[in-house]
Amino acid sequence: MKQPIKPPFTEETARAKVQAAEDAWNSRDPERVALAYTENSEWRNRTEFFTGREAIREFLRRKWAKELDYRLMKELWAYTDNRISVRFEYEWRDGESGQWIRTHGNEHWEFDEAGLMRRRDMSANDAPIPESERRYRV
Image (cartoon, rainbow, N blue to C red; front, side, top):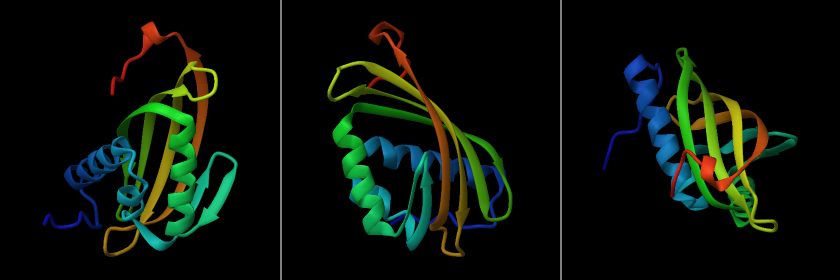
């Protein structure tokens, strides 16, 4: 079993934390993703605000039921002792219309001493794209 990546972060450990998050989210497994957060983790995702792992699981189930063929890229933007900021892009196909979307955004993360995320603030914008312009493949 791998050791958890814990603060205080260095550039190397911050990059590893970002890569671990990207890998987990690309699994599209709400159970796996939720384990990276504290039991009472606070989230802001666009206009939604919620707290706790069960709420995270419910959010992700709903998200990936709509956002089909989801594929994500995260990039380290900045880090401090126990915080990381990333920019991200992801592409997905709308489950109702079939339209491909590229989502661009930023996230700010705060971690506890064990390396679990206790706060996540996310802002994003969606842009419809033709399938031929996709950058990220499943």
